[in-house]
Length: 189
Image 1 (cartoon, one colour):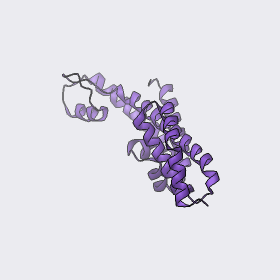
Image 2: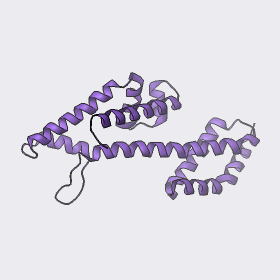
Image 3: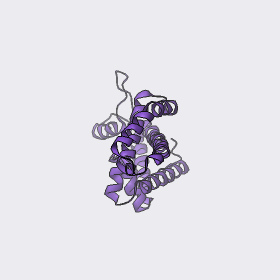
Image 4: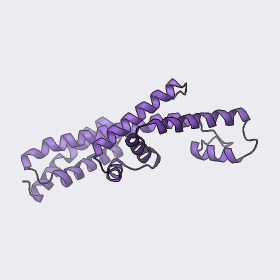
């Protein structure tokens, strides 16, 4: 079992190399620093009781998983941002507004858009809602918590009473199923 001193010395010795590795992977210093800090915290919290000789391999695996999780989150966010960006509009100053705020505002304003636009948007939103309802209960629950409620993986796992890995699997399956269903209905991302 590693003592606190051994764990601290290990983290100090690996800090710079891990930061460089993360910078090369994510190509952003601030994000890389966040990844390294997350990996160090996870190592200390979950594996601080492991022998000192196991720490290097555990840390590398944790760091890689943190980086992969970052890429997965970015991919899913980009998918939904792309989908929702088709609903956004530029105002007179050229600023793009939040698509959800735009949709709410346009429903209330008379004559702001044509009846055809209103009907099309309503149909698309209804299609998205219908496809979300077709997901399995666990996938729908994980998807809504992660992407609509903006909960992180740990919070979602705690709320659902399952592991973080299960949350990731449910979210991945949900996004793939939704993307496929929407594409089949002619809604392009």
